[in-house]
Amino acid sequence: VQLQASGGGLVQAGDSLKLSCVASGDSYRVNVVGWFRQAPGKEREFVAAISWRGISTLVADSVKGRFTISKDFAKNTVYLQMNSLKTEDTAVYFCANKGTPGWSVAVVKRSSVYDHWGQGTQVTVSS
Image 1 (cartoon, rainbow, N blue to C red):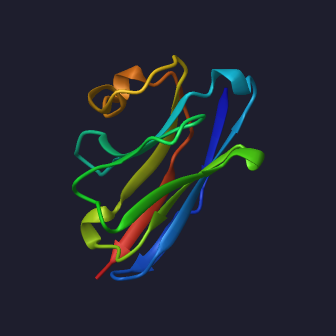
Image 2 (image 1 turned 135 degrees about the horizontal axis):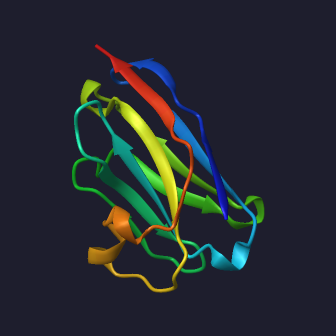
């Protein structure tokens, strides 16, 4: 499975961005797609996840109410809609695929369970 993330950019606080993650390759191995972010000098942080074949979604408390995760099955694409962006949202955003089936809130937050990672897209929010 290959993942291609895009949609990042430089925006002002309060603006919106929509990130895309396109999956290609062995689609049967796409099970949970997650978004993580990493700011300079900080650890990688869970942002959101979505079950590829189910209806489960999870959004981190830090972005709840501002970020929404969705998918377009026909386009093999997962989106991260980011509204009301803050300067603390500045980071490189990565999408990742958990190749093993199963959904658990505790598990999908852990970056270690994801098998395939995209290259990341930079989001910079200025004040």
